[in-house]
Length: 313
Image (cartoon, rainbow, N blue to C red; front, side, top):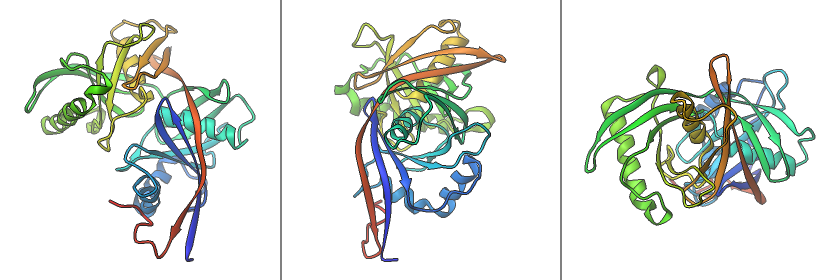
């Protein structure tokens, strides 16, 4: 075949891009998202590179591959990926997927379930743009873990799971404002490197691949402002849904947020997510609400003669 075509729909959730693969590429059999994620990683990773690397993408794009439902009662399955690999869960991406499915008229019910590698999540579509995601169970794994960061000094933070692993830093002396993004990126990269060097990990030895720095919000309607460094080295343009879930789990652990009370998390660009939780069998079940907007409906062309058909990287 001289050319291959992939239909994609782009959106952004609070500023963070999601690119949903709607048609084309390898056929997804009725397999668990975790299995399909490994097949994509091992056999079809060139599609990930084609979609999120230049010249068709950019380092901050998060991709979402839609597939058939696996568990009873689910509407579809999804695997998320970015510029360096694959994610367990992505809440901003789930909001983008929900808005995309509504745009494509693949959703009739206001509430439905999606299967993800981290487990099933419940989605409620409030309007064309606003969506709530009841995330996977989240928890605070360790509190007040101190590390020495080269060229910076000593920091302390909590290790938590919100669908991905996070190190949440509360006191760092930096301004969490857009003008300080280069400095925050520099610091967060060194924090992540120090975590790996010192052997600070999540449950079962899992790598902590997200770093979250907190500061005071610019909007008094919000409770805090965050900066989140993602695994690929880019910062999250949104307030990060899995990061907000991890934050809520830590607040619940410290008894600083009551069940059902709303935590409004502002992101580095000034947008926000609302989050709250309930207890279920002793576990924190967070719900994150935010807005997404369709930005493109397009066909990507992979030409066999194009030296960069699978991206530049």
